[in-house]
Amino acid sequence: MSYVRQVELSTTFPPFVWLQKLFGFVPNVFRAQTLLPRIIEAEAGLASAVLLEERALSRTRKEFILLAVAAANQNRYWVTEHHQMLRLLGLPERQLDEIVTDRDKAGISTLDLELLDFALKLAKNAPWVSGEDIARLRAQGFNDEAVLEAILVTALANFFCILSTGLGPMPDFALRVPNSVNIPRPDPASYVGGTSGPYLSVIERSPDTFPPFAYFVERFGSIPNIFRAQTLRPEAIEAEAGAFRNVLQPEDLLSHVQKECILLVVSAANLNTYCVAAHCEMLRMMGLSTAESDQIAVDHHQAEISGENKRLLDFVLKLAVRPSEFGREDIDGLRRCGFTEEHILEAIAVTGLNNFINTLQMGLGTTPDIEPRRVFGPQDAHLLPSGEHQTDSTQGDADAEFVTKVRGGDPDAFEELVTRHECRVYRTLVSITGNAEEAQDAMQETFLKAFQHIGNFHGRSKFSTWLLAIATNVGLQRLRERRRLGRFEEPGPEVEEEFRPRHVRPWADDPEQLYSQAERRGLVEGALMTLSPKYRVVLVLRDLEQLSGEETAAALGLGIAAMKARLFRARMMLREALSPHFASTAKRMGQ
Image (cartoon, rainbow, N blue to C red; front, side):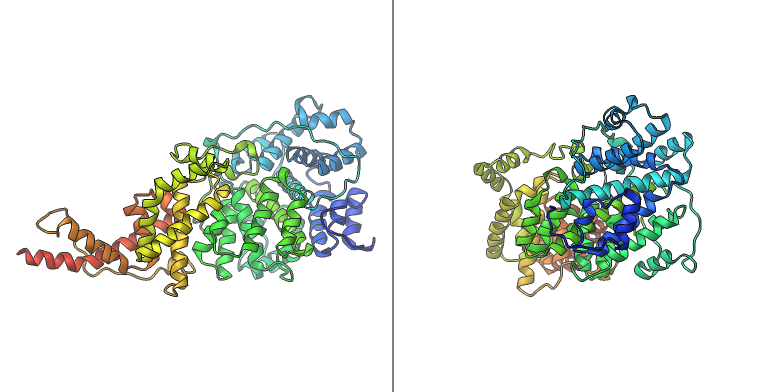
């Protein structure tokens, strides 16, 4: 039995016929999804398009890739399946074991070794795949169609591993325990990020004559670069369009916003800048603000979404990022939150499809269709699915030792963190709320939330930055509750209100031209409170609390460019508000 219940479908159900032709039987991982036949149709369509025909790569080479990637993911179900398939294709068992443990001794050709090395790098270290990897395959005699097929097979393997982990199907054969696979640790200096291509040649196709492109134009308004880059295999593009129709387009279970949030958080965890930019844009078109989508990508626990949706995103991230820890209890947890088995099944399928698209895009190296507000890089490597590539990004953080102690159950360590940061948090909250008493209450709420969620702090920024992000959200929420602020962020970075200064004059620290320090501080504080909260906060964090540009952007959930644009406007607004005071002071001093 799998984690979700099954229903009977006819043996003449077309996707089952396709799967029977492909595998010789219908694997249990697909039978486990019979509550949603449209999902099986999408997956069977992709599998048939990628695996069935022997074109540039033979079925044996494709199964080599599938087996190696399943072993790299420590996925017992698919290691067993592909081991059995290769035995049926005539390979001896000893050779199959060596393919995943010691490929140099497996008795396979140099070409196959190169292909497997590429597939494993793409499967587990996709952001490091570059044009040099493609050139190496070309030098071995693989043409662009063969490289594209290798990318598609690797992406499909990652998709199927997500499905079996999330569904827990009964094995079709006696389970084999995957041997460990040695995958070289990537060098941060060689990071590419999956957008330095496109790497492969294409054939021009028109939406007027190629129906999948017409579908993408209808759905997205244009043809995303990831699909243009696959025109050497039009049947694969057709299958991907079918997967979008059957998995992402329906809204009878999970909403479009919920699905886009799943795609966004998992793409961010995979360091896929291309897909994060695309899904942020989709959410913007659905009514979410720039700040909201950025916050969901960076840390959905601090986003203004329901507790149930936060739990849903926790579920898909665990499935995608920590599959070895995933189990039936995670399914039960979503059930307790009110999600039906159909909801859960669809969430698993969306997560799997996301990993297919993420892997495919990074193998192709396509440039983003939407200008990214944030570029993911080695500094975010703690988010990678493979635990081997996590880095200690708390290094250099003076609070790291105390954070570790708190997470280990030491409450006194949290008291030390409160002592270290209460003044800064209080100043930030006073600047947001404009009320000392309310700032005190908000400070208590901030530290309570930090204590409750410290298990979700993974060190991608300093603890102080994370804490100020919580304080900022708490302060802004209190403003909303006072009905003095509707939304913190507008729909996009280009709709910031127009501001043209009228009274800008140079400022200098000349005591004959300025008030005394105390009077000047009072004027600045008064002028600061006249600004809208979103401009007030960026000034407080950047100029008063002296956070770096990167820390300020992270605390506000903004990209660096958006933060700089907002800071510039805020500084000009503050200068405009103060200019009359300095002008009148100068007149009184006889200038």
